Image (cartoon, rainbow, N blue to C red):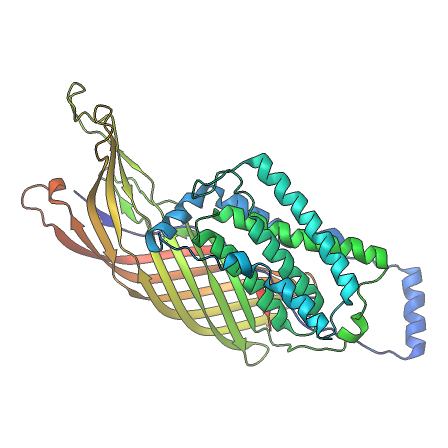
Length: 464
């Protein structure tokens, strides 16, 4: 039996950005008169990114895109969950989803000024819940997607995720300008809720992305309509505009994406690469001491699934042990990664910035198996799976170099496109089932090879 270790994958990501503070300039009266006349003669028009429809739909569109991109990989993501925490069952997500809304109205009851007074906030929130319920339930009972645990066929989209992100958007809109910690906390809790749905095996990863998109879209639409009714952008905007945030681009980000291999991971006897598209999810953040320099790090989970390799096993159809079909299936490579290092930012304008990073960290690998799965029509109740070999990559030092381009498309929201190069030198240990070895071949052997891959995606980022 021949196995050659090489590496690869694709990574997609996701980011949302919260900037903080507004700048108010006071001009002499003769300047304001001149400016007013100028705008009467040459009216200005909002750019594409400043248009209301773009601001409302941009982040939800990214989330819906992430849902579509992960649809065909959802079973691979669940496989990683089943390998690490197959018995996970904690229902914190049932309660955590309501925390941002409870915090919003708790602050208002305590007299903390936000964007709107209590009554207007309640009207906006009720409107967003109505929009969300219509969208979620309308899709759920039309799509009829089965849940990962097989309990029902109303998995897509995730109602818990939609509710959590709708509530987080409420807290962000009402108190994000007062203190960015409210936005970070709200979206952090919403993300934990969404992750909990996957950990509890109640939703596919594509379900929670779509739910998050619906939740944010519902809140955006509610504020749009209610603001039109009231004729302004909030009851206390003039008060909130006095707050000014830190101009340094310190941030906390949530990311998810695909990874692309620079080498193949494993090849079969015909030298056909078995590696498929991979994925990565995690958190990233940095504290900037100046406008340009900072230090930070990231935590991520990565999985690299494999294609099936069809094999032919000659057996007699008249015998009980007749095998009609056989596949070799390799469990995905799984890694937990921790890394830290310096960050450098270049600011093109108030809306655009480019960041570079160089990180070093530690990669913890998971054990996997190569299995032979086969069909025996004459013995349907017999075991139809055999472990051919087990593999265990040794934990290793990891190096990451990356760049990220961010566009702040609203006063407290933005999106980042990033690309990272990941390198480590992995040592693999293989233990082979003796039944699959030729006489004299070793049952245990090791191999060392580079593990290089590129990640590309978008992030949700909160600046503080």
